[in-house]
Image 1 (cartoon, rainbow, N blue to C red):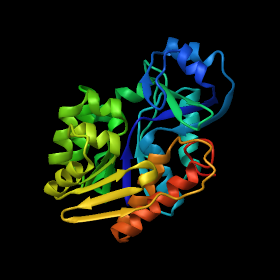
Image 2: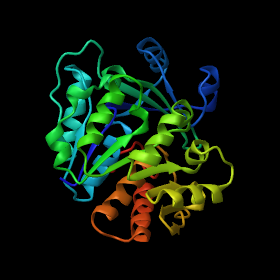
Image 3: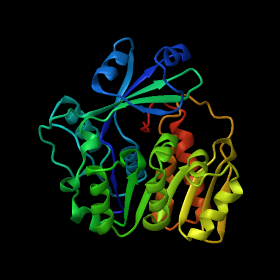
Length: 309
């Protein structure tokens, strides 16, 4: 197997809202907020659902890799409930091998409410449910040993059981990549993430805000200097400025695609990672991998949701 991902097994519930909905519910645009089941249901009660999809950041990346013809797998915790069945069926449709046997859990399958405003930005309210309770017993060691790359998401990182699950998985991996996921994630786990990037990860994906926050700088030249010293592979998306890949002394950039009809930015980073990793595992150059990432992210932002049709 080329790549196995471990991430939040979350069913995405996609709704269109206006900016006043965010303001009235004290939500910060373009961020992810963790909510409990009660708050989730309250938010959803006044909304019309556009689409329901098997989601989660790493699962989106894995689905993108599968679409590009790669043999991939996923580990994520769901419950034996209606959403759990929907989630598993969604992965099967994407030709993703699912290394998890669902059973009745105390908490239900996780759900993410994705609120799309008229400017195409997405604001997420996530009820993790049982997804956030992944533990070391949920890790399929053989699947990880038999994969070229293990891919993780910062969203799932937390002290306690998820951290132990990550540690166990990394112990048996051949190579480890991770997405820093979200600015709030970085700020909440800064010392841990810095340790991971410096000492445990072979490949790190971040956007410009996240990596600058991680190393406490406002100067992108400092990001390049930091990345070059690590001698690992760091990939940074920079919005309209394109993307940059840094590996040792090699610094490669590309430009963002122009004149796109942007519908929804959900999954842009996830599909960028899919495109880049596809290039990487198929021995394309860093520039070609960046271009493939940009191509995939450009496609996904012109449709609703984080899965390509």
